[in-house]
Image (cartoon, rainbow, N blue to C red; front, side, top):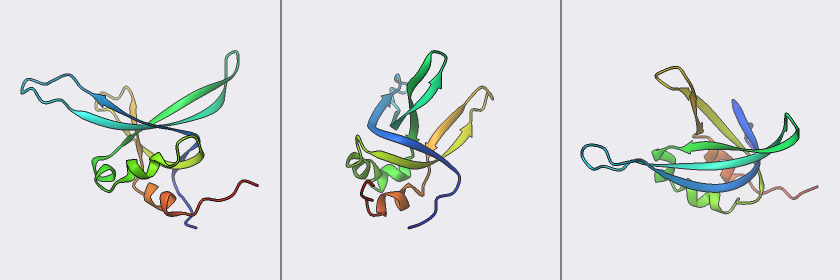
Length: 112
């Protein structure tokens, strides 16, 4: 089993969703694919569930990663991620890291 490095998101895999932009001046609609992992965190009024969305790159889409992720829906997962800052400096986008392929190739461990 390969050891993962970098930031990890751990929780229950919720699936994927497509975000479609409004048409640009040429009528082109941009589609982006996200996947979500939910986890429990301590909120102001006690524990609350949060869903972290990760953008799936075109390269990972071309390699068939979304269809492999579908088998994990509802299961506990640990995904490697990385962040890129927005050009205006007011936020960051979370991406599913390319080494997600290593995670998907690992055998599923039985719950203990």
